[in-house]
Image (tube, rainbow, N blue to C red):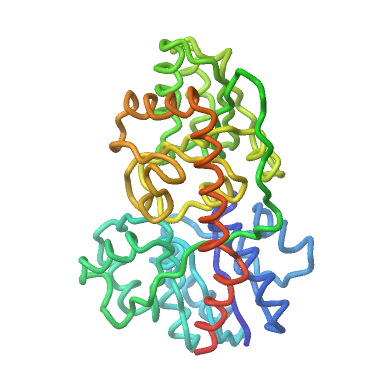
Length: 355
């Protein structure tokens, strides 16, 4: 098979990481792979460094409305002679879906990671209806969310959910620290939907309760400076470490005692799966696809959506009970082993490509 990966983003996130790892799996199976991505972006640089073929693809704001741009993209797809094209974002689907189908790509697949709809514009409706063969969500909640909006998708386009997976061999259960200071943390893009502002409020509640903790925040994004300013305003900046981009996520997770995930909406979060594989219990808001990942009272706690005071209370329970933290961490690792092995999940994807 010849498989194309279309990703116009210059940043590095969960979707880019999945494209990179899925392409490696396909190549190991003997498939030919091709990336349509900005060559100066994080994904483009990474795939080029290990020898993947790329076609430099940068989208302008109204790319989908530009007839010349669409013709050029159609020509790229025609020359590529793809069997499968995988798309990861609403913007990319609108930009390339129709051109791909007109160029003869037999299977255009949209992998959806967030239970949110695009804007209800004709351009998106047309892209979903006519530029897409199959819609695959990475969480049951995301799949169910789209099923109730038939204006975007026909039932025949919605394929069974395939969850995210990780290389479990890269993550192993951390040894518990005897330190009296509990380490909280999250690896996340610093953007509004990730809710780091809410996490800082949680830290403020914990400080007022007299809890002994530090909070590590890994990641970059457009809100970095405002979040640092918020930490100062809340008088918790001495307890918070902004680590920026990190390469060794496994080592970061092993430095944590509790994974504090305050995203406003999310599908099957890779960062939660990675923390589970490291034996770190999770506290998260009961929003979007969190029920698919976190079993309340077994491998962590689910908290009423966006109630930062209740979130802090659940974190405090774990801070004060090391044995419960250890028990939840062991259960988290077992969940990751059972449901989120990347080899199993990539195999499901590959089988779907071949069907």
